[in-house]
Length: 163
Image (cartoon, rainbow, N blue to C red; front, side):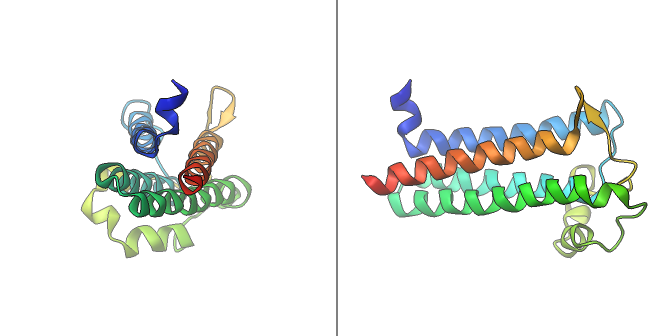
């Protein structure tokens, strides 16, 4: 089992699957449990999608330099996602409006809300989107996964570079 996780390809695939599962969980929360997303929630979905994309590219191409780049990109994106989750918790959820915040500008600037509105369209204010899941703020679940993805990427990148 340890040998499986020492391989960058396997770790990158696990990172991609975990990121896509996070988006899936967010969509179930939204469409089944009516937990509507704010711009910061949507931005975190976009970061998980970007992580999945770079991880899949690294896993499929299997070249050492590409995998190192994918792991580094995963680390940087996970750090950005963690920052978004922390901002959502400590700043944005106290705000009655999320309009024209950095998250809103990024999502609309990339036209994600137009390309896939069921996934990337903000539908609630930050205050309205402040909900708990199993006793923890929803954004902390996202933060925990970003931290785990970051740790996996760093650990794998170090091992890859030691070869």
